Length: 200
Image 1 (cartoon, helix red, strand yellow):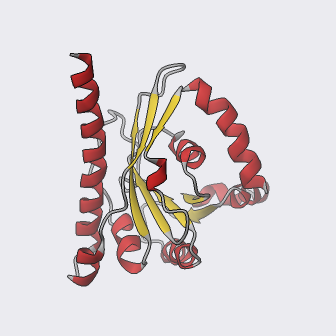
Image 2: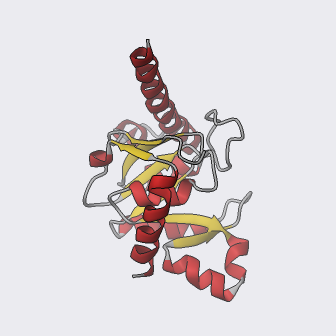
């Protein structure tokens, strides 16, 4: 209930504030486990992905935030779960897999930290881990900013990636994460190329 209230309230604020344009929302499967992987350019990325997705999303949040009982309860209510950053947090990995096994949706930012230049960086292995250890549909997402008031912010969801090759050929989590990140880059570059052609 809290999740839906928060999603509705944030949508009312963020859609007009950043003139959000969503492309490819239909590429997110309506049912079954889904792993949404996006680039990361702002602290607003989680709520923006949350309000533009057709599915309710579970995001990781830094563990320190859950130390406050009230804040921790609020975060849990909006489908966040704790992760110890900079460590291989087995509890967080286990929790993410449990969510996917329940047929729900997990949102990840493979880079692990925000890009200060808006350029897409190298991913950590986490996205590859979840993609390999689950049967989730992996949906790439590109957020194209900048986050400026009343300037266009575009969120693009690509078609689910074919992970079968990586799952059956024993590719490493890092190799798989790299492949996912490559698809996110392609989404961004293809969109920007189309805009450039239209401007000519």
